[in-house]
Amino acid sequence: MKLSRNFILFTLALINFTHIIDSMLIMPLGDIFIDLFQINASEYSLLVSGYALGAVVSGLIAIFYLDIFDRKKALMIAYAGFGLGTFLCAFAGSYPMLLGLRVLTGLFGGVLGSIVLSIVSDLYKFKERGSAMGILTGAFAAASALGIPFGLYLAVKGSWQLPFICIGIAAIFVSILIHFTFPKMIGHLEKVNQNRSFKHVLGAILTDRNQVNALMAGFVIILGHFMIIPFISPYLIKNVGLTQLEISYQFFFGGIASVFTSPIVGRFVDKYGFFKIFLIMLFFSFIPTIWITNLPNVSVSYAVFVTTLFFIGGVGRMVPANTIITASAPTANRGSFMSFKSMLQQLAIAIASFVSGAIMYIGDDDLFVNYQYVGYLSIAILLVAIYFLKRLTVASGN
Image (cartoon, rainbow, N blue to C red; front, side):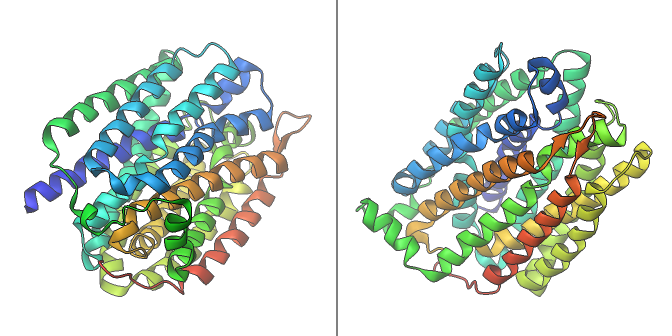
């Protein structure tokens, strides 16, 4: 059973790896799309949030239906649809077409996170979940370290379409692997109430203060985090002076560092508790947030050092947060809760992209203006997460 569980965990980490690359790929390629389609900062922000908008819609639907299906089948179908949507993005010939395909991809990819977290929560008890979350979060870092630079390399040396083709094919292949290797995952069905009415499903979540606090914590953390994310690469190119290929260094070194630090943070969560570790990582993350959003024209090595610290802090604070958030819902409605969580977080990404795009603009000297204010707003939002996380407790069945 241990080998089987580990195989499932690392396959789920691989799924995280590929769909996180896809959800992030628009950002490092932002300068290419801005020039290719002749779009402004607001239109680029909409392109970044297109995936999230699709994910909000599918997340809303999944709230009512995810818990009544075999998690294996749900995962396989969602991942295959995500792979197909990503593959089709490579053939977009205009800005509206690419935007539409990003929304389509988000419809499938948006539920992957909730399915993955539901499976991990079913497989791992709370006392060992921190380590499992560290591995899943490490997949995010690995995606940045390996996938994003490779995607940028393909885009710069070949064409911007190549990363989408590679990710799409890989996702479809892994979907087939899931079909033949994963066991049925129907243990949760015994505890699920078959009444899937709007009132019952939402009532089970919204009348539970613990689940509401967990949802708000997840929303606020993602909102604060993604205030910074969309414009890091364009800012590094226009304001700091890095080339399109040089910005891949931030993902590589930041990702590599986080691959090592995330599992360590996970073990600390299991040993010392989620809240103490969250506070440490949160306040540490504020240092590179202020630094990176005020960064002038500096050397590549200097810029990469700052972005690496930002990666470590941003990824590190997600490990303790996700550990307690996933334990805040009982087994009976875990899938619905995770879908609600995913929907709210995708909504947070969309809102963050819109807000940061509204605050920032390209000045007469072709440089981005007001990024420092986005950084200050990010910190203010993240401080609110302390209020919600401090009130969370572990639900029954965890």
